[in-house]
Amino acid sequence: MKNWSSCSILLISILISLISCKYSNEAQMKNKTQDEILYRPNFHFSPRNNWMNDPNGMFFYKGNYHLYFQHNPYSNVWGPMHWGHAISKDLINWEEQPIAIFPDDLGTIFSGSSVVDLKNTSGFGSIENPPIVAIYTNHNTQKEKEGSKLFQSQSIAYSLDEGKTWTKYKGNPVIENPGIRDFRDPKVIWFEKGKKWILILAASQITKFYQSKDLKNWEYMSSFGEGIGNHDGVWECPDLFELYVEGTSKSKWVHIVSINPGGPNGGSATQYFVGDFDGERFIIDPDFELQMKKEHNFWTDFGKDNYAGVTYNNWRSKRLGVLYQGWMSNWQYANVVPTLKWRSAMTIPREISLYLSQDSIYRIRSKDITHYKESFIKKVEKENISLNKTKILLNKDELDLTKAKIELEINNMEEVKYTFVASNIKGESLTFGYDHKEKQFFIDRSNSGVVEFSENFALKPSIAPRFRKDDNLKINFILDKTSVELFYDEGETVMTEIFFPSEPFETLSLETLAKKSSLKNLKFQEIK
Ligand code: FRU
Image (cartoon, rainbow, N blue to C red; front, side, top):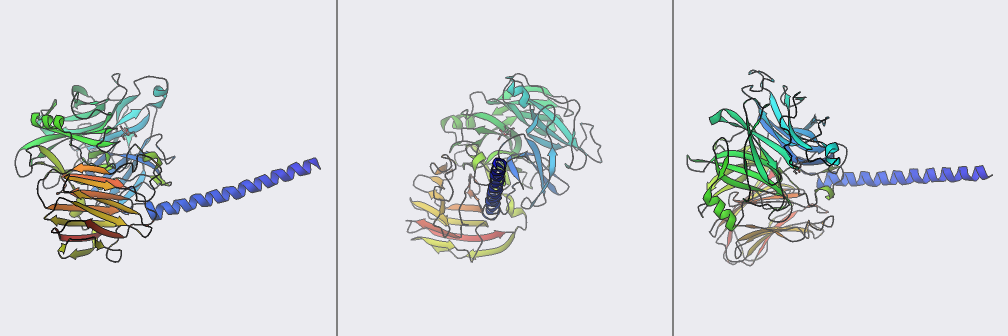
């Protein structure tokens, strides 16, 4: 009898756990489809499954753009890092590939870069089939646990099949840790004048420069950053590139460095420095440094969600700009954003160029690259619109706001706010725009849907300065299901932020108290 009752208790509890398991599986499934339908970006790269952070090792070769990324294939939060891989022909449609680089005895695979070794300087391939060489940080968790400071070192791997499969170099690591806790994220560039490779990495709160002839033997040259720029957090993911100043034949070097925390609107962001590089050291422009000391507003993006961005190797536009792409999240909340199946997307790639601003300071501008390709299916253009109250600019029958590129100009601005409102039937909205009195751009996502997962997500509106001094403003913005990328004044100020509405945003309007301003050249395009 006793046996019989304990047996039935056992059976009942198995049944209950089976039923609850079924329901929790169903709940998870429901959440997963919810993820896909509501949150999966239409044209920004996101991994099929699990966690992603920084873009890594990007290069262009034989018509393909290769994007690698920090990836934990086992879970939707940060963990043991691998390099995931995706390929695109147009920077909009991406195809995820098998994992490219796996952890090994030296550690997990942190951020880094790749180069197409066209001259086969490494000897890993041949001139006919140049090797792609990846340079990354090995992060040794075991050493870290044991309390050693020496757990990050730099290693290389090469690919002879256009970045699909990789062989690790037997002589790894190629740069040992010199005793610095945060010592990572190598970016390698070819320095034509000196016919040599330059490697830049982040070391605590400075950057270090190395040189090599063969990508295997590296020699330390110099460091940069002591007392310069923002130092509110650790420096990560540096890059260095030469750009012509727009409209001139003069070139300057731009050094970018991500920092976390310390961003202009909290958490992660990417600062930049303009100067010269003589093959050994980066020398910041004195005027630039002075201006930076007065007011540090040198950020590649002022929104909260563009981090760890670096440029593509083996790519230059006709105007000799570089191609730059970042991770569309922020370490303040990246691990808890409300997607389950996967976490994070990349920004749209942008072309960075250099110009002399109205205050005679070198600044960079970013342009979205969608204008390079036939990326659009539907185009709506509107006549000039005069502004005197709330105007509905677009509704869902005209354009799908979850895959839109929108361009317009506001003319004759008055000293008031111009607020764009993207809204849905639930009454949720994302507001962004420009305050011509304060000369300031803003994004407010406090009413944009799910925001409670982190107190930092919608604590206060993000703001950004305007550099141009006139009463006309050109705006170009890119909307996906869960992100907006705002390019103002032809990319002089950029803001990128993510959001999680419970229904898609369908209507776009503009609210303002302005009486004499008008909207011009409105062009709405739907991305394929
Ligand atoms: C930046 C970063 C890098 C590091 C990687 C680890 O987001 O912290 O410095 O290499 O992420 O995933």
